[in-house]
Length: 110
Image 1 (cartoon, rainbow, N blue to C red):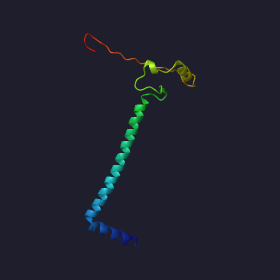
Image 2 (image 1 turned 180 degrees about the horizontal axis):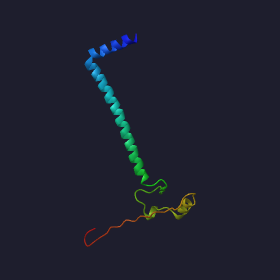
Image 3 (image 1 turned 45 degrees about the vertical axis):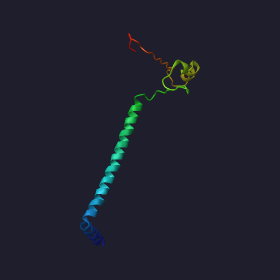
Image 4 (image 1 turned 60 degrees about the vertical axis):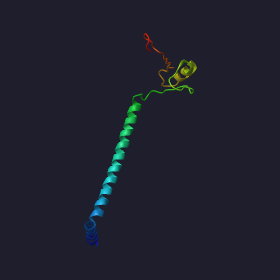
């Protein structure tokens, strides 16, 4: 019975060459697409993890809720909040991080 089934299957594959070729080609393309997507997603995951690891795994940034863009003197964190953050276990240092921007003028050029 199994022998007859295998012979019948091989005869059908042989008589329908184009159909068999297109089926095999579709299977190969499908497997290649799945492997490509898996490799691409793994590569993207590694790239994102690498970018986040540049910040360090022990750094936490807290910013005021009204802050839009770089911090200025108006929206820097109050000392009371900095003291509260420093009082948390395993926090070594808290910096209010005040950035100021200025325009440098040399002669007539800015």
